[in-house]
Image (cartoon, rainbow, N blue to C red; front, side, top):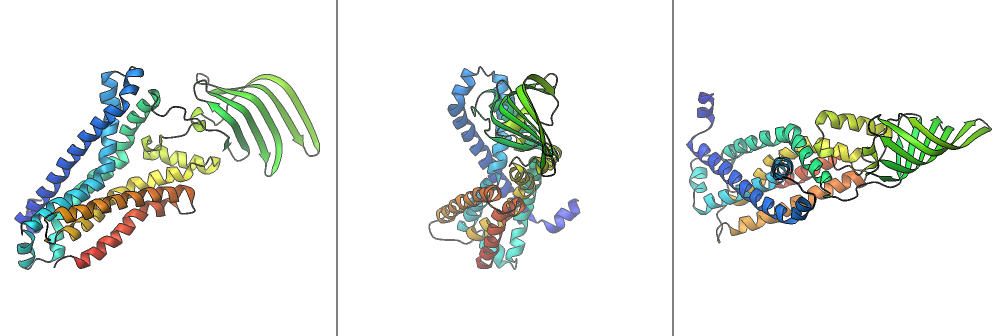
Length: 365
């Protein structure tokens, strides 16, 4: 291993790698400290009014908050770190001797992509394995301590299986009660049975729904039978209280659980399929931004310019905001338009990857 590294990584490579990773981790720690300070001031009322203990705040909420924002900010901090130390090297005339010593620009990029690979590997395994677990800690704490208020849906339509459909006009998450509940059983396009109830209450002990004050209409061709004023009925349905709640927990699901929910959502059609698919694909694609933004950062900051590192940093900040905007628009396109989630996930890195290749042709050789 040492022989391999000695062959492909020279002293100047290790110098750039140390600069890269050192600047990246220092900037990351700085941003996280600032984010935690601002978050404490914003949510102090939630901590106090809900009587959260110091242990819960530190080891549940911030144990999820810090990894989440480290992962979220990683590409942008990576970008700014590359621009900062590369522009500083260019300003101190450290890059000119490297390129003048018969080293191609592609060879100059090697240590950058080695360091970017380290960040990519960390980010990839964090996205797939660590972040869902820490997000679960954070989201459970937020839901328990009222960060989002009422998160229930209205007018919920669900397909429970091939022939069974459910509807609820509204839902109370505190009492686990669905109001104006309708359950329809179909045979193809023909309705065979329709149950209408004022209330459907979920019993978490028995894992059953208690349907109250209901009537049932049975349809057999042209003949119909109506049973009204039925008082109470317990039934098992493939329906959980979480199906009636705005779900902010997809980022907290493991990949296996997320795949199961996607398969179930394809049958139910509750409208969350694209959200879940976008979350799944994003876990694999998002870490690729470390390579894309590194290429752009080196290309725009490796040339020595008048005024020092101010101009490259200004351009870097502009491109950071542009990347954020494109990333958010990609999510909207995935959910609200006909654009497939996997195409939307690749959109930011695809566009900025083309920009990076163009800037590479303009970089100093």
